[in-house]
Image (tube, rainbow, N blue to C red):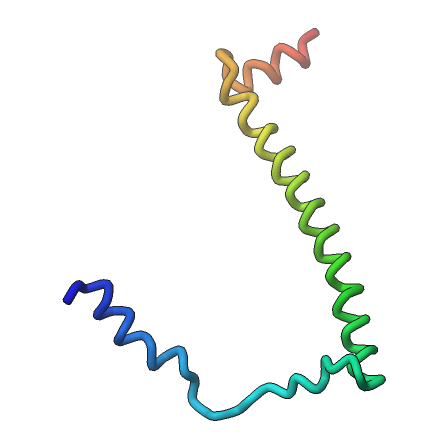
Length: 87
C-alpha cells in the first residue's frame, strides 16, 4: 500500500464532520418568496464579486509590470531614478 493511499484513507473520516446536521436548502428554494429574495441577493453579489476579481487582476498585472520592467533593465532602478531627476 502506498503512502498516498494510506494518507487518503486516514483523512477520509475528517471529511465526514462531527454531526449529522444537514443545511436547510429551503432558504434558496425559488418556489417561496423568501427563497426568491435570497437568490436575487446572491446573484447580485456574484456580479460584484466578478468586478472586484477583474479589478484585482488588473492591479496585480500593473504591479507585476512595475516590478519586472526595472529588473529587465541593464541599469539599476536607483540609477534610472537619479538620471530622470537630473534631466
